[in-house]
Length: 335
Image (cartoon, rainbow, N blue to C red):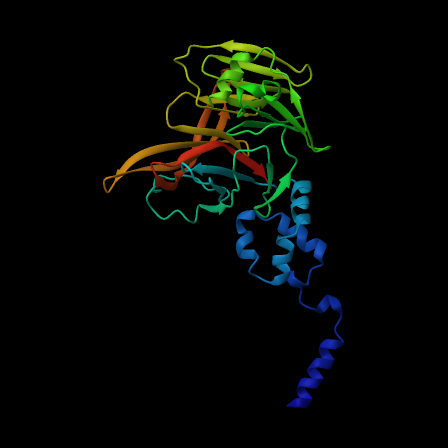
């Protein structure tokens, strides 16, 4: 019996490497990384359980560089809820790729197989301190401090910089708007000339901003403003009735989407599709509760410039006490 096993070992030893069975675990590191980078991040939690080697590759920053280089990044949503006198609660949302809404879907059924909602630590206190979230590992690190302390400020990314406005006192008018140069990691103030009324609106927290074609667009309840990044000047682009209150606004392929309805929390560009966040209020066991709901809509352009929407996915993500409020805007990153 032993002789037979020895003969079998010698036989396998004499085999050509091309005759040996090929497994994914035997692939070189570079090839395996390239394969994993092409798989949806939705599957990463399960793949990390395969082996220590898989866990190490899936945790490597290089994997996300590869995903970016080959164009396989996916959108990931972040949003925060706030309870009075308590630290905010932040969440990240991953939706299952190609998930579509069917007539058989039920909002009250178990929907854990459709999305992954993960709490993220959120160290927030009103100050000039800046914290940077690494979306790959959901960990925070310190960033360069702003020029003034802010609370509930508005921010937008464009032209390689981060622009922040509002959230500061009236005595901080010179720093009402400041910009972070990502390369140099330094802040500098920007003028608010031509947008004094807009500044007053932002101090009250009633301001929506968006970036489009080299300009920052800001909307309050009376006017729409545009800030030209090259000219560094503000201007009024539209005046509307105060009865027309815009609750949320986003830009998808140079088309501006906005909603003027109550209970709408935000609109965001989710990988080229429109993601709508809204809130509904209910009574449960004599207690008032809020349901945070999301819907993903694919946009289609038709003749005449009309834009139609097709519902792909919709459901309740969270049920919270009525005292919770939606904090600031949703943020979508590609990783």
